[in-house]
Image (cartoon, rainbow, N blue to C red; front, side, top):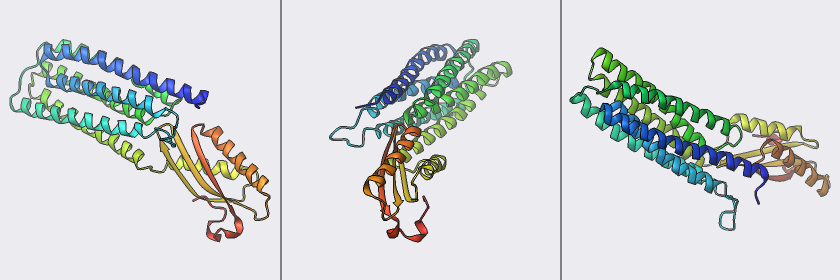
Length: 304
């Protein structure tokens, strides 16, 4: 059964992905019109990027819906792996668009063509930047309330879109003003390189999520500080962490006095768990209790 906090986080993550899909559809419409009006390879690159953004955002939407499903008999640790899987799909989609874009840019570089009606492309690029900026601002606001690898991946490639649109804007203006037909495909190559970098970044983040990489040092230090500040703490070691979608998994060994009654040991562990959940509401925590006498001296009072 999901908590009100979980349901609230899911709703915000879903709103962010729905907004991304709607934004991509609007941009596709605008850029399709602008490409046929201008014939600019930079506008084609921007159109392809938005088309792949739409597909990637649809994948993200499905992943967010699946990742926030509660654990069941077949998936006792939840469905959080759907988010990094969506990230890998995003990476593949974006890499595919970049390959097609680079091929078209090279062809246009060999046989340059003048840009037609650049004012249309300039206007559409400005509009695209405003719309995209509104989306990434909303996504950033959502991520402060509902951390999500899939939404973060979506935000990363929409941030790259801002730079892409700025390059398109400059390219259309400069090609027309300076009458340099080769500038348009050259900037198309630049945009292609940026898109490739974005795909690699998203793919690496997704890979790390699937491989259960430890959380950041900052989060680990916060966990250690909470554990050490708890009443009755005598020592801890073997802290292990990982993230799976919206869930954080924490496990460690808690060192307690040999003669401590079981009921008191349970209460100390319960108190530490409650303190961790107050800071990390989506955490799943496993605490193994060790008598201090059986713990190696080099591990005593440590949390490595």
